[in-house]
Length: 110
Length: 121
Image (cartoon, rainbow over all chains, first blue to last red):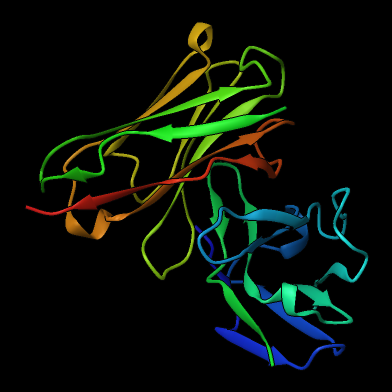
């Protein structure tokens, strides 16, 4: 199995931009789609990005996703940060037999 | 409207077997592409994928837990059942079920609210 490693936490002021990385330990990040989930305290996760860079309907375009084969990582960028974006964020991918979640990143809006 | 709801015991003793039921509505697990998966989250920790069953009754299990897990479905009742044997305090977690619409590999698009299971004697 591979692992997905994320920074433990990031913080930024309202209106600014944050980027969360998700590094795959083995195998190519481009070989399987990456999803990103937002989880607010006490709630189930919800999808903010699927298939590397697609936004579900209802997710604002302040959220964007990308992958970088050179660093074997995916990234979630939140621009125009709002207090409502304060949450935990998890990347997720899979291989032929397992789904894998990232280690999670707590986003704090100062 | 798609909904999923987890049910099961809130407290189990070490070495016991946990049985959780996911009851869903708004879709059929006999429809091509539909899957239901189980994910857990220990308090204050990350999400961990456990198992998945698809419309064709194919089953996938976490490599690290597969010897302890069994997933099954009852299409007529719109239910998916997960059993986990030999429970340990480290298995204390909120257990979620979630839907996948496009077959194995697609994202989770709807989640249940989760059910907290505590393992303690």
